Image (cartoon, rainbow, N blue to C red; front, side, top):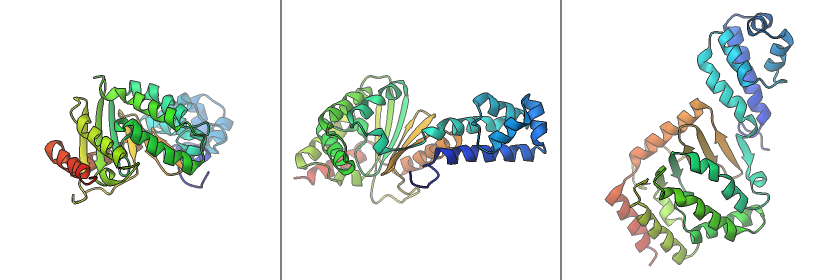
Length: 282
């Protein structure tokens, strides 16, 4: 993996270990003091601080309790849990093709009540037509040299999107205006896709905001991301998918989404921008 904060599970483990060590030192406790308060051997404290032993959730809670920093336990536990899954290269996720990846996320989509999605270059997956999904996934499969199961993957993606109509979920989407003119597929594919956006806006569960090119920016355009309730964020990089579960980091994306939402237009003004993009295809 590339050397980056997201690319190494060991780097995350070392970060958690360093934070635990700082907490102990700030509490003016020796390794032996902490071990005594937690009821374990001093060697365990040393191994955890050296990132040689991964602490369990219970270990972290005991550590923070011993240092009177219980409020930090949740973030530390989330960071520790996500060490192996927070950065996964697409080539690992997609090595057997694209269909299985679409289906693998179904349980997460089914149990999520509130989706918040920001897209800067392509249509949100939940609103993609099958022909648009096919064109986009074809580009992805070609670029990454994947097995060609694009037809099945596109059908699976559309099938997964039934949640926008079942009344059990709330979907809030923010799309940069450039997405409307970013050509994926031919004019017919784009016309169907843009028309589908207009239809989707009428669904009770869907809130679609378009961020005009001319909108004064109060937030730069970050990478595409999807928030699943207030618990999890998937960030799409060119090389990998990043999963964020640490509460404070999830909060960063929640705050960014709120700022992006202030720049968006909704209802008739959004329909005007979408219709303008549709007319431009003629």
